[in-house]
Every structure is written in structure tokens, then in C-alpha cells.
Amino acid sequence: MLNQRTIAKKISVTGIGIHSGKKVTLNLNPAPADFGIQFKRTDLEGAEILVATAEKVGTTENNTTLGNGANSVHTVEHLLSVLYGIGINNVYCEIDGPEVPIMDGSGASFVFLLKETGVANLNKSKKFLVVLKTIKVEVGDKWVKIEPSSRLVIDSTIVFAHPLIKTQRKIFEFSCENFIEEISRARTFGLLRDVDHLKQKGLIKGGSLDNAVVLDDYKVLNPEGLRFADELIRHKILDTIGDISLLGYEIAGKITTYKSGHNLHNLLCRKLLQEEGAYEIVSSNALDRHILQTFELPQSLSPSFY
Image (cartoon, rainbow, N blue to C red):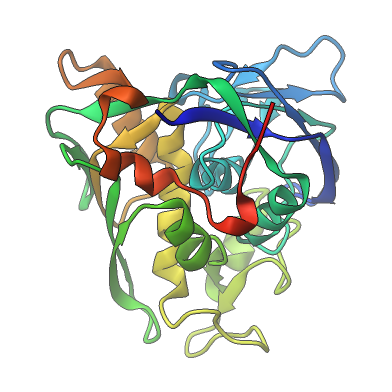
């Protein structure tokens, strides 16, 4: 049996939001079994708690946002991806602004913080969402689908009219160790030619070469270059994991994406949850050992018990 996890102690981080440009402090607190991931805006008096589920997603333009209107938390996908990547199911997130700090544009800073604070096992088994039939969502020439598989696999393709990007594809077989080593350090990215347009829409006010990979028409502008030759498609996988974690469970299924984004990911989650007979929820003690092994933590993140 594989137990649910939380963090061992409270931890805080301060940074800026990539879209809002606002300085914000995020407190992550341990939470009991079956609590899930919940966000609370501490800067808004009487703000309702936002449970991190697919149904609570509001806008999906260049980020995934929980809630609508003033009581919203933007750009939750990188944090959620890391929590899923380390198999942490229960955290109470207090935030004093509208957006999760972007840090360096990847999940690496959150992985480091969780290594420092530690992971704690809870006395209740994990639950898995097992996909039983194929679900697909299409918008124009972009699409995403989920189908039965014995473990989480993501087959992702991006296509950009740029000489350094072109068409990139990567198939990622999930495990906690693979996530940390192969996906967590991949940064968000954008094209220099899109910057003015995005700023006119009120986005990327806090964006810089410190928290995003930026490409002009020919090259990467960041002095340090890329962390991986295929860093951009790896980041797309990081985003996908964060978005599909909003299903609320560990997942046994294969996800294939083609030119997809946050909106398509959310539409897929909603369609899957609404489709009768498309999935079942099972306890970890009902699953084969090879599925559970994907959630074993590297030695540096070995959980404590309480």
C-alpha cells in the first residue's frame, strides 16, 4: 500500500508573479489525509478557500487560474506539477497576492524547498484515477486525449514556426525520480516578438530572462542558454502534469497532446470527469506493485512518518 503524503512542516517562499509583476509570499502548510491541495488568499478579507480541482479553474490564458474575479490564484500549474511529481496530495497554501511566485520559471525552486522541509507520510492510502476509455478534445488543429494505460505516460508535441523549435516531441514515463531529474528544471518560454502583444493584454508584467527562456527570431537570448536541448517540450510536459493533477488523484493513463495548452488540458479533465464509465477511483492497495513503484521517492526526499 502507498500512503498519502503531505509536507513535514510549514515553509514560506517570496517572489514575483510572472504575469501580475506583484511581490507575493506563499506559505505551504501540512494538511491531513483527503484534504487535497487548497489555496487561501490571505490578502482578501473573508475570501473563500479555493480547492485545486478542474472544476474550479477559471481563466486559462497563458496560465492556469483557480477561481474567478478578485478571489483568484493565477499560475498555479508549476507548483501543482511539483506537488504531483513528488506525490504530495495534501497541502494548505496561504498566499497574500493574486499569483503563485514564478521563481526561475521552472519547478526546480519548489523541488528544492520541499527537499528542505521534508515529506511526511499519512496514515491513509493514496487513491488512483484509472482511465477506462479514451477521451479526446480538439480545438482547431490542436488536441489532447487520455486513454487507458497501466501508468502515467505523457506523449507531447509542440510546433512553432521558429528555427530553434520547429516540431518537438517527447514521450515521458512518469516516476517521481524521472520527474525531478528530467522535467522539474525545464523553464517556461516565450518569443520576443510576442512580448508587446502579451503586455498589452496585461500579461508577463514580471517576466524577464531570470524567469523564462526567451527567443528572438534566431536564437535563445538567455546568456546561459538552455538547460536541456529539448527544454521547451520538457516544460510543456511540466505544465501538462500540473494541469491534469487537477483531476485530484494520481493517474493511471496515457495523455497525448498536440499543440495543446492550459485550456485544452482543462477541457480534457472536465470531459473525463463528466463521461460515464470513463474512469474508476481505486485505492493504491488494489494496484500492481509496478504502478506504485513510480511514486517511490529518491533517497534525498525519503518521507518521514507521523
